[in-house]
Length: 132
Length: 113
Image (cartoon, rainbow over all chains, first blue to last red; front, side):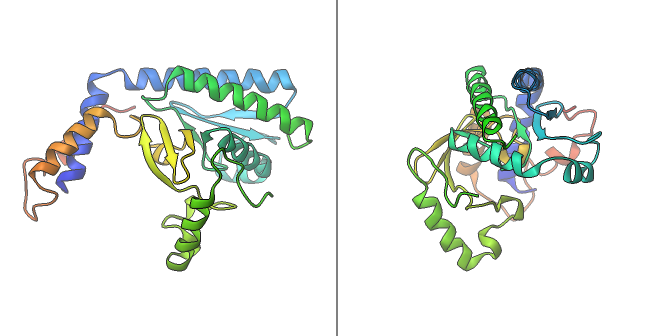
């Protein structure tokens, strides 16, 4: 076992044992998912918000149940998602375009509120441009 | 598809680093998932849940080490443990006190969900 990675790994396990890491990340991610769904409903955007635990992801124009990677590839607007993430990157919220987002233990509620506001603004702009 | 990012400090340094990377790595990346248009954003520093790119732009990071960094970047307790290990050596080429630590953890002992 590499002593550097072992030291980091064991310290990480100590943190998740001692502190409410999962309670915080899962609770905040659930809040993010619910707020995103409410935003898309309010704006009239056809989108599904996926994810569990600390993870979240928007899929635009979903067709049917999105249970597998193949479902997502065939039944969603991947171009809209990449553009959504690209616009968020330009507003200071980093996503790998087209991929899931994660809430960490050090992600603050203020940062998440800022993201939710930016996501609503970007989604509105894409709808007005006919992209979502 | 736009051919550049519109970022507060621009992206000239990331673009330059990516041109250099294209000469030495397939697609300019060491992991295919990191390749995207118009170019990857090159990260050089982190703080908590924030990353800063090579041009000085800051972002709240939701990719977070391939969505696996549940503690965020360089959590203080992890950083302290790594610093202590650095002071004792980077690699021994021999077993050490931490050798059996992570492998010994059973799924029931490892705090995860």
